Image (cartoon, rainbow, N blue to C red):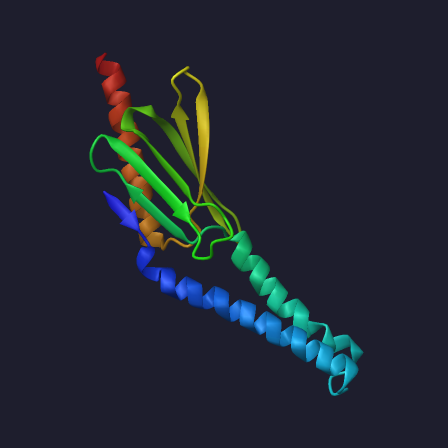
Length: 160
């Protein structure tokens, strides 16, 4: 099964650019209000910087926007990247039989996917991906596919 939200990259780029533009314009309006004009008063002037900062912080905390998953073949492929290039993209590929479990943490602002895999030295490695920007249907499909792989792994271990 293949799952990705690359088609929404333009929208996320637009949102991030808009937040940045509103922040810059808010800073400019703040300093214009502070030194030249006095329409808003001292207390509400800070809102010109605070409100766009909060939106930018929420956008940043939600994590990487683009998530790609591929379970076709004998390997699982995970890719997670930003539309902006200030963070390194995460890309992992490993055989299906190494997948032990997964967990999706759903917080108020963000969603994270934790994958537990078995290493060559029989140690558990936890991989973390941001899935905040996946729709409910895409998240349901991801859970179904990962559960299917884990179920097949358990059946294969019983046969051995």
